[in-house]
Length: 82
Image (tube, rainbow, N blue to C red; front, side, top):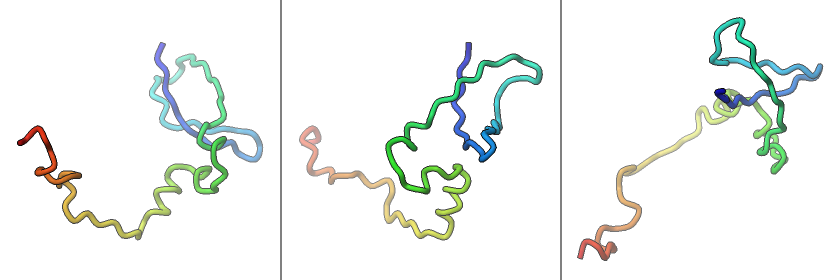
């Protein structure tokens, strides 16, 4: 038995739409619905938005990496290299 985790939002009428399920048409599946742990731990509104909406909120934000491959600490601080 294979298990796949998909997040979805419950609509006002109680329906849930599941997209991208990797099974062939006509295959029987078992569906277990659990409340998302993230939505239980926080009450921030953006967490309850669908993933594509959260990505859209990042559009236009500025992120800059001066040297993304630079070590977190200087090489001179590593005792192993001395």
